[in-house]
Length: 329
Image (cartoon, rainbow, N blue to C red; front, side):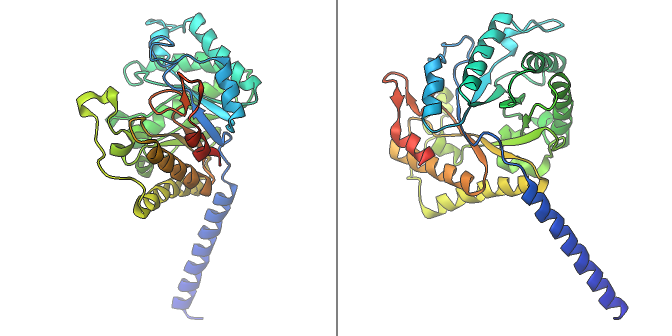
């Protein structure tokens, strides 16, 4: 064998070895523990629970568990219930209310993904870190079915790429010091968009899972969204062409492959369609996204139980059954 042949052979062996390592990592990538979740939005992230038209009741947890789902994501705004000066103590009454919902869900065998929603992360980093040390310590003896998610949709220049990863690493360490081995859920910048995975790495894969959000096409999912006022988009076409469905599968596969390459559990933590869109279109889009996730073995958590993207009628106190079926059948 001449020198050129030896080089080619060595390169081939290296490529095979790298491919084998990549396949082994993919094969070892864990599954996100909560497989079929529902966000309980518009309740504990409101200024006061009920201000946005929804209060969480024990019955809702039973409805979710009996409806074919295995967990909830619980968005909470913490900073408005926290002292403005050190040691930045969380209001015990508010913390007790959050605990009431968390323990109620865990008692029913549901996973709980405890999230921070709307907290101004960048304005007071010391206060934000202190809040999460308290949360982690308070819930340290809870079941491992409790997952902690300290960031929701980080965005802006200070929350991109390596800068975001560094901030998340410090917070992850603080949480794991207060609550060892607790699974921490993190995601990329640009509102946790799948495309933002390209320039972001999780601080490590130890005690970390990754969650991304999906509302594409935005003009469709947020069609006539009343909270956007004059800026609300309008979607004048009909969603559901073969090309539309293929694009959803491509986006979800992109996220799943990213996770497999890194051996990290992946979740689609938010997806949904505003109620201004016709029900048949909402059902088709929701089913498509859910099937794309399950084809890639990604866990998912739909937005939302009873808010602007509802699965459940608040007034009639029943499921919007076609949407529930789109998620579980």
